Length: 147
Image (cartoon, rainbow, N blue to C red; front, side):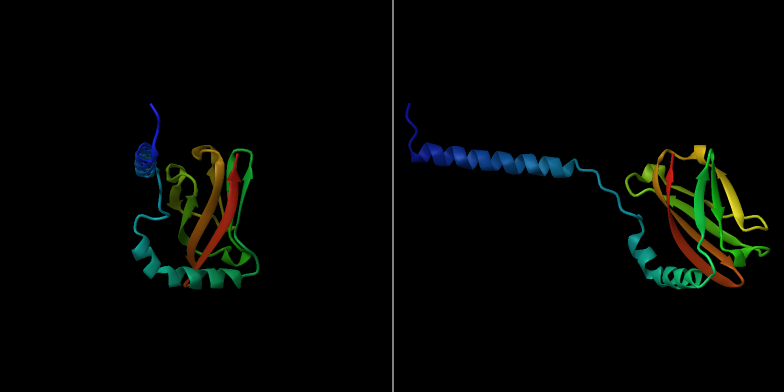
């Protein structure tokens, strides 16, 4: 059997349609995650985050998160020592929301909090610290790698 231009055109259309079907099936099976499920509500309150980050940048030092052995040590700036601090701590993992952890920020008189790092799966996180002290709110993001 010989292929004429009609057969070639039909095979071309069938190949094109098959490629489109394959791409649709692949796109339907692709997993995606948003940073927040309430993105628009969070966006409306983002000016508070900007103001808190600006106030945190005016302090004498930055908030830090370090890992020593099986402990994560959260250290707030020196101005926060001997103050009543309330706040939240969110360990955000950009690649897998199942690794995210949210917890209350409970620092001691030295503005330090110690957390057991075995509560976390290994990976790269962004520690998002939001706290209130001195009747002001502060916000800081610290990259941390947990081993």
